[in-house]
Length: 389
Image (cartoon, rainbow, N blue to C red):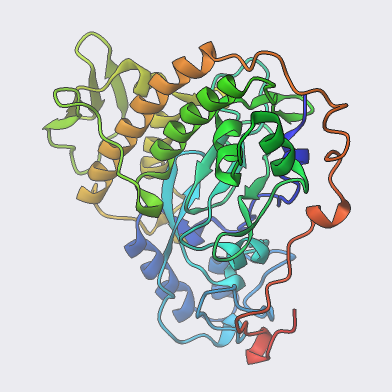
C-alpha cells in the first residue's frame, strides 16, 4: 500500500515547546504566568523561564509568521502577554498557547506560515502495537502533533501555501485518480479518503487506494463526515451535535475542585467528583487514541498537580465554566467519532490500485517534501531585523 508519507510528501515533526508553562487549558493562566516571569529578574527569571539549549531569556529569535510578538531578547521584555491562540494538543484536546517564538524551542515556523482559515492539518498518531484509536486526525487549529502514546507522528498540511493554494499531494496523484474514477478528484477528497482508510503500521501510516469508483465515493463520504466532526464547525461547517434526547447535559454542577473522573455505564453518567453529566454514550467514554482514553487524559491535564513555585502551578483557583462547556462538546465529538469508527471498521477498500499503476507518481520528487516559499508578507527577524526568506 502507498504510505501517507508518499501521498502527502511535506510534513513536519511535532512542535517542541521546551517549557510546559507556555500552554494551558485556559488563556487567563497564561497571562498570569507571563506577568510572573516578566517581573522576575536574574537567576529567578531563568528558573521560572525554564532554560534549554534552544531557548533562554537571552536568546535572539525571529517572530512567528503571522504573529505580532516581540523579537527583542526576552530578558528585556516589559510588555503584556501576546494574545494566546487556540491550538490542538494531542488528538482532541483544544488548549491555548502563547504564540511567542522566544518561548518555544521548535515552533515549526513553516506551519505557522500556512495556517489560515482554509488550512486543514492531517496529524499522524503514533503507532502503538494493539492500541485502539484513529491512525490520523484532522484539525483546523494548528496542532502540536503530540500523541498520548509512542513516538510522535508528523503534521501534514493539506495546502502548501496560504489561501488554500497548491495541495500537499504527490505531483500527478490527482490526475491519476481523476482518470481512474472517471471524474475530477479534488485534494479535499483525498484527505477525506485518508481519514476513512488510513492504517497505523510500524513502518508508518499506510493508505490503500481503491480501484473501484463506487468504493471511492463511499470512503470519501465517510471521511467527510469524520472530518466535519473533527473540525468542529471550522471553515463554515456546523458544530457537531447529537440527536435530540441524546445530547449531554449537566445534571449536577461540577465542583470547584473535582478530584476524580468516573463513568456509570448503566446510567450513562460521567462523574467529575460530585458533578454529573448525562447521557454520555459508552462510545465517548471508551474512545481511545494510542490506547489512552481521551476523556480521562483531558481531565487529568486540567486537574493534575504541579510543583509549587513553578509557572505551571499558576492555574484557575476553581473549575471554570468554560471547561464544562468544552467538555460537553468533547463528549459530543467523541460520541459521533465512535459511531463513525464503527463504520470505518466495516469499510473495505476492495481491489486496490497497484504500485505499478502509481509508478509515475510515487515516490514523490524531493522538492515536494520541502515547504513552499512564501514571500508575500513581512516577517520580523531577531531584534527587529527584517527576515529574508
